[in-house]
Image (cartoon, rainbow, N blue to C red):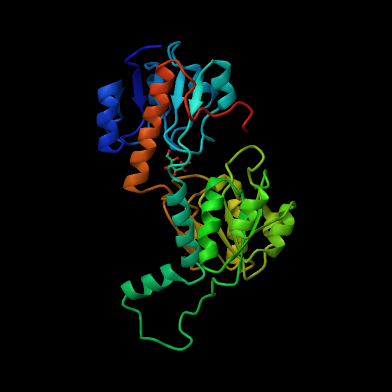
Length: 327
Ligand code: 8YV
């Protein structure tokens, strides 16, 4: 493996990360920082030993087919890797890594921000003040729903789900969850979490539903029209995972018809396009995929990418190699 690998990064990264990459590797960045189109992606994969994409790059079989023989590692800058065709990469002997762990707390914080903002109507209130339309305090003015005492339903109790549960518990929410894996008893006890083997049962009991599962073939539109119908008119839906996990049209129908109370969304089915119907709704808080958007987190993600590349270049298995059969 090359001691100074050619590393092509599809976006700009934090200064400290770029500087370190330039020290260690023959590194190239996307000076414009606008996402590469498909032709540019093909050129980029054709010219490197290590390719560093982000969530804004769709690395499908066609792009991987354009890779040069020297491409041996796709070191994704991000935890989620649903934009990379793992089977196509594996078939070419290309290793894929991601950056788990370093964005857990930031994403959980942003989830809590949405859990607090939507039922308490934070965005609506802020808009009212800015518009000059606030006429003063009133006993029944802009009431929302209390968080404490409600049931938080978590889909996917991995790192981020657990970090959300720990925070939510401190706000007086009780924790219910469903996921591929049941967590150990001791952790369940520590989080005060109740397992629901059946997702529909979780949906029937939750007051606030928050999604923390990866987007895979199994979770694509997991929350479909039928399941959304199991939620009640007092229920809020929070999504900081991936837009594709919800049938966005069915969610918007339910929001418009007030069959659910509201939604807090950081991710969308077709980013960066946000369905214009969402923009008309007052019972939603909409964020531009900010889950991991802290200076500290983005720098740590970059250092994870570097660690993965260095370990691979040294001839070892990178620490965050995406496991075969994981999805
Ligand atoms: C990242 C994310 O910023 O890591 C993820 O899975 O969704 C984001 O928080 C993004 O993936 C960067 O590529």
